[in-house]
Image 1 (cartoon, rainbow, N blue to C red):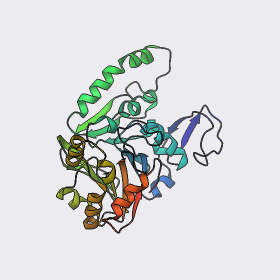
Image 2 (tube, helix red, strand yellow):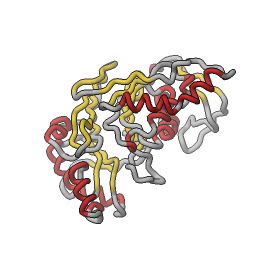
Image 3 (spheres, one colour):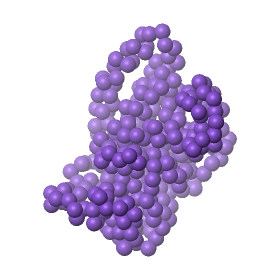
Image 4 (cartoon, rainbow, N blue to C red):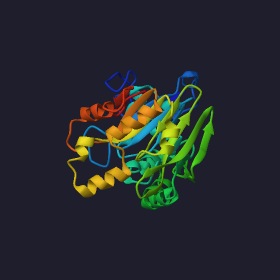
Length: 314
């Protein structure tokens, strides 16, 4: 059940039950409908470090049995989680209700909204956020708390009602590769990917009773990535345009080739892995039309492939 405050509700483009203005939600439990729903994927951010008027930076949500598991938290992801909560009627995507975050690597376009997630309505968060990521996750968390210390002092010492004085705290786990999480039939495995000099960087495989999903993070092609992706229902993979890359300097071409995956390379990987659906995100286009990146993947792959947009649901 949801308890709502501070708004009237009306239909609009964000969803049938989208609020007309800001609303505070507090859940008293997971509904039967949420528990019975199939595993869903929501693209909260499909962009890159390059500012984009239409795309938030990288973030993917997997919704399972009334809980939202987020993979990366790029800039704009929290606002998109709020939009998706109403557009797709997913209560667990309301920011203060999000339970878990898994970070692929510590680059800013995958982490900038981490503080936004932790400190949005922290005084009403029902429990601690769980955050998993590579070494550096605790350091980032400590730095975030230091940055926000004035907010904590002022809210806790003022007349503002604070339902949970420890709601800002985060249960941090720094990962090594392997199975890292299991709950209610959902199982998550972190595996190392090859993101150039960034080590470790992780991809994640998520298995539930009804779906298997791989999220690549930032990576080049590797045998481990292929093994983890074979036969999955959904492969969500970063991509860079072959023709766009050719417009870059020799130095940037060399960097991208050792850190990212070109569209034609991704098509060859998918041809071996044969996912049920290949979802392209974190696309680097460098001035070429976005649709061309799909054509470049299809030049080496004959399976189902889509270019994701923010708030897409799979």
